[in-house]
Structures are given as C-alpha cells and as structure tokens.
Image (cartoon, rainbow, N blue to C red; front, side, top):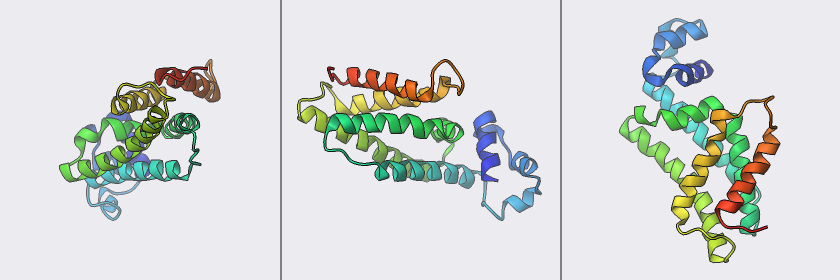
Length: 182
C-alpha cells in the first residue's frame, strides 16, 4: 500500500490521488486501506517521515572526518547517491510539503532543518579553519542542497554519464562554490 501510494503521489500529485486509486493499485477494497492508515494525510506524513528518518539515519552512519573538505565531499556524494536511489520519495518530500497539515509540516520541517544543519556545520568548520570562502554558511547550505537534489530531475541510468562520474563533477562544482582551490 505504501509503495503504491508513493508511486501514485509522485506521478499524479497528492491532491489528485484518492484512497480509491490506492486501493485499486493494491487490489484491495477501499475499506481495507483503513486497517493500515487512518487517512490519506497520515499516509503522506508517514511516507515523508520515513524518508527523512532514513536520510538522517544514513547520514549519521557516515564516518565523520575531521577535515572539513573530506566531510564536505562525503556529504556531497552521500546526498546524490541517497536521493538518486529514492526519486519518488524525494519528489514527494520536496513537492508535497504544501499538502501537510500544520502539525505534520512542523515535524517534517524540523527533520529537514536537522539535515541542513549537518551541512551548515561542515561549512562553518571549513570557513572557521580558513579552508572555505563562503560569505553566508546558511545560504550556501540551501544553495548546495538545491543543486545536489537537482540531480534527480535530469539524471537517467544508462545515460551519457555514470552516477559516479556525476558525483565527481558535482564534487568539483561544490568544491569551487565554497572556494576550495586545487
């Protein structure tokens, strides 16, 4: 049911998907869906929360290099790989925020801020050490996350560039964006 809802929300948008459509995609009666979720809003929140929990959990499991440059490279590559492997969940996590009820929005937004804070901490460490030249670490955080997440909008498996090559190119762009010279 969760997989069907995820795919339907990503393809058609939360507002356009009914519980009846989800039931049809899972070959169950509409009433049976309510054994698993109280309503469509709860289902959307659960999908977003699971995505953010997985993101934060996997980020925390990464090694924590002392060197800000190494930490930034790890973050860059992690972000691209994690998000690329979950394109539907990423789309929903970014595009369907507007459909969350205020309490659910606040909970997801808090998790997003925690993720952003991890990148900002790397940038702050690098700036303090004189390794990065960014005028505003918060703004740089937003810009870098937007750039990295954008890979999902255009990258296709089997295309001109492998995902590893895209990571290399994006790391080079991130490196330059924060003022790291070769």
